[in-house]
Length: 462
Image (tube, rainbow, N blue to C red; front, side, top):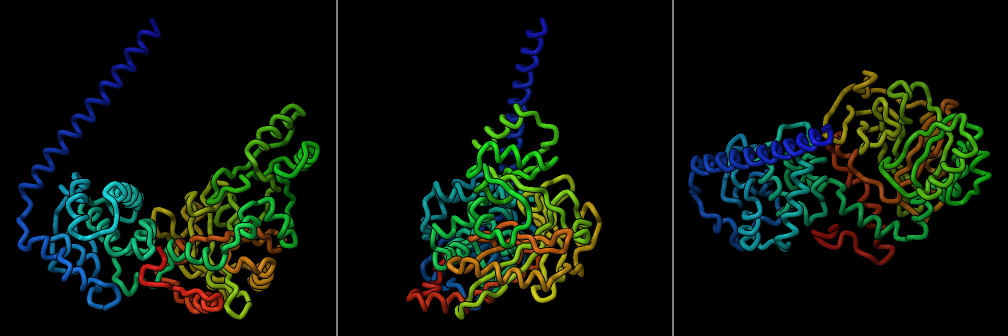
């Protein structure tokens, strides 16, 4: 009887879900029809704006189009009479959102965009997903459509992915400001030009090899399941009640966790050894950080990300620095795990900005501890600068690295890991200031010394 009742309940739930979907679809269709009826006729045909003569005037860098979103609206046949980066405040083309596939099929041939229909539809879905994740503004269909076309027509080919469009608020910016940023394409070009040795990069990409090669800057005890025996593993666990476990090759804090090891029986240790060996993890002593930094959030080790570049003169210098603070209950401080990023003055070690999270929400205080970000100065900053420059020279064959370090409870510098392809999201999204000028001079000089040209063209960083 119980089985029969549960089966009936499941069927009823399925019917309910289907009815909801049908209702939503019918409602959406009626809304679209209403919008189409209310939509004013275009005063200028689209073909005029999609002509080769008009498109030739849209080349970047000529200073004529400060408001790129406005120019995109003109190109799509919805010219704005006012300057605004939220087109939905002025025009309404929501119905295009509901038939974006038809819009893409119709517009791509007219605008001469070198991309397949299928790929464009896929990119729209990713773009929309990123847009919906932004909590700094409410979702508007009109903005989503126009910003997508702005990105597709003017931004994508210059090496800025859809994530960059929102991280760096390109919907507010024109050509001059947009070109000042380090985008995902620039990051990939740096990797090809500077950090192009897979063998050397492996020493940073594998956490076990990293700890071995940079042992002089690592005080914590650690063990890699990749290069240790069961006996060594058993002995290691016996010294700790808890350990920090992370995959050998993952990034972004994925798979990192704290594991209880106190009171494990020999059988449990054996099972754990088999499981973690299959996973391929590194097991580390849990670190204690400086109490001033821990006051922001105690459950995570709040790291510093410091970028170094070995310049054309062969000497390492710090290009940018930022701090990261995790949330209560989390075990990592990563931006992608809900943490907050802040800008740090490389000369003084003082936080110069509010905190920013992945949803693009700015906060002057840590949301859990309520400690103010801006104005806090990291202790032992002279030690930090000295250590980072020494670390950068351990392997000069990897000239550009983002180092993750902490200041421990003994005021010593502890190296956590190095990233041979560090992202540029936090150090530019937090203060909305492009940092490309910091890199160009040295990078172009290094390229010239190697007989390469950097940049190669206007779309060099695809």
